[in-house]
Length: 64
Image 1 (spheres, one colour):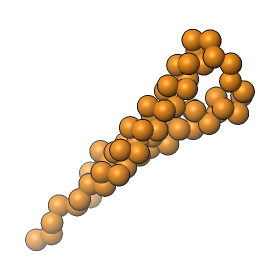
Image 2 (cartoon, rainbow, N blue to C red; image 1 turned 45 degrees about the vertical axis):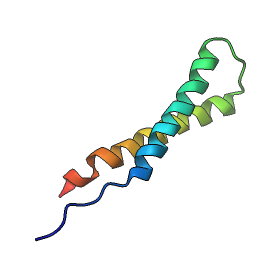
Image 3 (cartoon, one colour; image 1 turned 90 degrees about the vertical axis):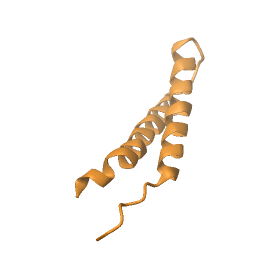
Image 4 (cartoon, rainbow, N blue to C red; image 1 turned 60 degrees about the horizontal axis):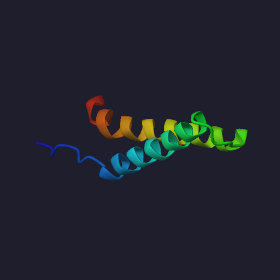
């Protein structure tokens, strides 16, 4: 009998933080802040990485 896989709560915290930060940057850009294209790409990258971390947290154990 094997134990249930432990969830990595660091992935949850990092995912929420990345999505929050990236979302904040995109929101301020859409409401009128002037950002360079590079900063917008980085903000979108944070959102994507945050989504991937949340995916790993919630659905990784269902692969068995």
